[in-house]
Length: 520
Image 1 (cartoon, one colour):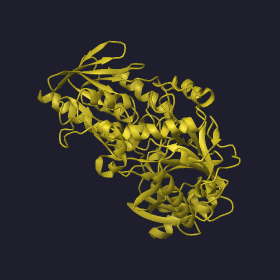
Image 2 (spheres, rainbow, N blue to C red; image 1 turned 180 degrees about the horizontal axis):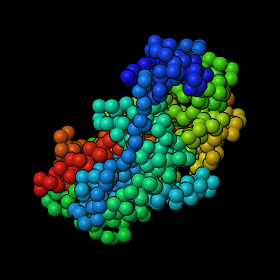
Image 3 (cartoon, rainbow, N blue to C red; image 1 turned 90 degrees about the vertical axis):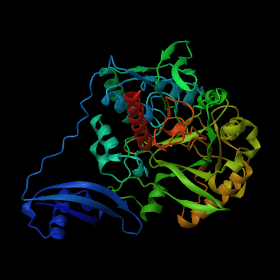
Image 4 (cartoon, rainbow, N blue to C red; image 1 turned 120 degrees about the vertical axis):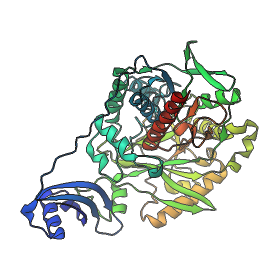
């Protein structure tokens, strides 16, 4: 007999298999020795009250043996000689689109402007240590996309977009821990995700697909209103009737290319703000109502949303036990983001704190048409570079000083490796964003007692929360509304917001693409 049981237990109980067995037996009303196995299905933390609890959903096998499900990858066919689909971008949308193409019997040719996942590390070191930005290989561009070296968070609200469990199972098949199938907020970690990405690439190649690194899309060849191929920056031509465009939210040159070719794109609202860093100890104390975090609890995250002057102010991409990273994609700009290793064992916690924007906010840049949001981003990022001293040193203020408009006399060392420069962030941020954030932080402090401290440091800017452009596509076919054979996909096209949702969108685009090929 199998029974599904929901429990709420103390952290030390959740960490003790025998204690869980006793609790389950008592709640289910069965003899302890009749339970052959307990499978944890879901796990989450409830820290709303002073006594922190662990929520568990378990399946118990009573007088019945348990056989562990074997998570296996699909039986991918060899597609070496099959009809090609060109995929621009080797982020989660592009890689999962490639896997789906193989599964459906078509040959993916993945074109990636950046380097393979290991070679990217040298360029990350260069921006962190030497302040050198490689425009094609950085935290945003390269194999695995932006998520590979900026955390690997797998939480998504996109349940209606597709099968989240399928993506998680594929990641487990490629080497991720099975815990990502259980935890409410799954996370792989920047230290572990590269090896998984490499295995995905090896699978694509082993089954007849191609992955072309250091290969930048220069032009899209059209015959009338239909795709017929692409031109790379080296002048090579790759012929194809189907093109999946999965370039990520920072590929501004691709947006500009589409605009020049009069391929329809549109401005899209996004959010922009700062990244704040606290000690992880303080966040644990606030969230867990304790002096010292229990060894049975992970470093605490936080999530908070407020309304200020009719705008949303909220935490974004919160990284417990993590660090702040420089994520510029061009010289002459500063962009911050955050990431955590798998153990989340760094002494600091950071989060983007951002303000929601509307299309009306881009009116000063309306001469740029659908690229108005891109220009808005650029202005802020370039202002940060100038204020920071024309290096990758980020402009920064202590948190209370920021809310009071005071220049910080000194700054502590933060996890941001290029370093920080004391500045008034009002010289970086548009006035309405600056004042909204100031009021927002004060409101945060009312909810999270202790959050408002001058030991916390605000870094500017956090500007790449999502794409400032949407590439419109038909809701049913997922083809571009104007160009046949062009499939805008993932975050860069404005249809996803993270690793899982991008991977789901990649699969969906590949399915629609292959279905259209079979009809042609």
